[in-house]
Image 1 (cartoon, rainbow, N blue to C red):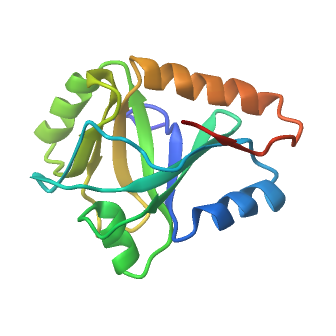
Image 2 (cartoon, helix red, strand yellow; image 1 turned 60 degrees about the vertical axis):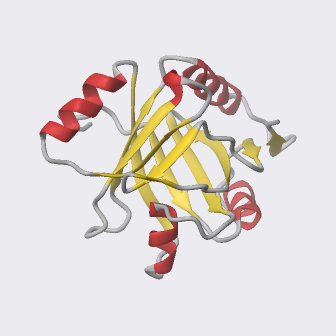
Length: 175
């Protein structure tokens, strides 16, 4: 539990091969099912204040109340994901905190001196997210994510499905 952000709700892994990563989590760790989005459609994506046309695939699953996210960037657009890989890393890149009071948490984070590395929006204003720069300590980038809309309901659905997962249909394509 963070006294500043609340509970860690998601661990985000940046990977070079998302299919291999899902297979590892399914077959070695027994975690699933994975909800896979081949090409995430963002309303906007900005890296260090500049628009960036990031193309990425993501997969989401839960291990109890903790959501796991796998991210594979599909192009060379500037992003913190690309910076992480270019630095020779692969694996845990960020921890995410979810909020239904996103703007307040965002403003408080900036007031504490955190700097936005990249941010964007998926599916409207209630789908905002921001990653704060902490490249000096790989694996500990802070993400905040607005879950007050459809994204929050989708995340809750993933958690509920995972709670009773029997191993069937381990990768579920989200269109």
